[in-house]
Length: 280
Image (cartoon, rainbow, N blue to C red; front, top):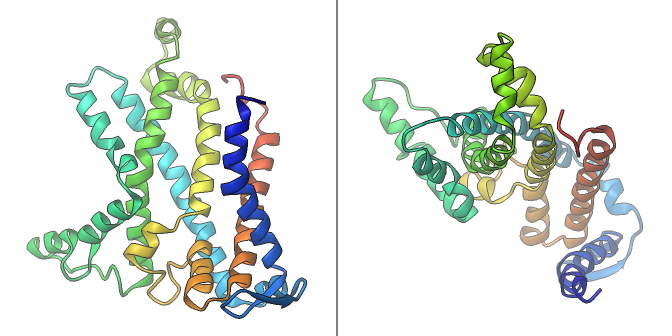
């Protein structure tokens, strides 16, 4: 308890206490200057009838379904490449991981420099090549695509590092034995690499889904949830209610829903993945 004490105090102050307070005020009514009365489940009933909430929830689900598999696949592919004899691989590892070190707002601003509809680098290159510019901010699917691309750029480095650590823990004798049995590169990757990095995939799946449920800074800086509600997700909608319209109780209810969804997904994955502690 002596060793755990400082961490438990920090968790209690910065995690459990705010979570409990949010849960409490989600059952109250807020006038913008604090809770003004107990309303029970009214905020949660309002969620059920709120089309903007469901649009944000759908966007969150689509964002998660697109970014998580892509970031896992790209991270594993880059890890396999960086684990091979590649000239300058240490430099490439650093460059790929760099977005994880930089502030989320800074990387989002880099995304603005790339995907700004009027002055962005991508559209400038398209115009120079005689192609039509892409309406990154005025067209919903294009804006959503830009968010996904920047998110992948941010997340792939972390996934690569975790997979790289897993690959370096695999005995080279296994691959040598597979080659002696006539297995080609694809068969080695499919039947050795993918199963043996299974525990890392499980860990990254949980982390990436949690990140996708909580994504905020990239969307807030690049699109602000627009155009319309095409890039609005649950966290940006909670922020809008809590800090723009000052309806903290409704924002707290949205936050509790995000927490419960994340907890439910993690619990299902934890119980369903029987091989999380063993390779294969």
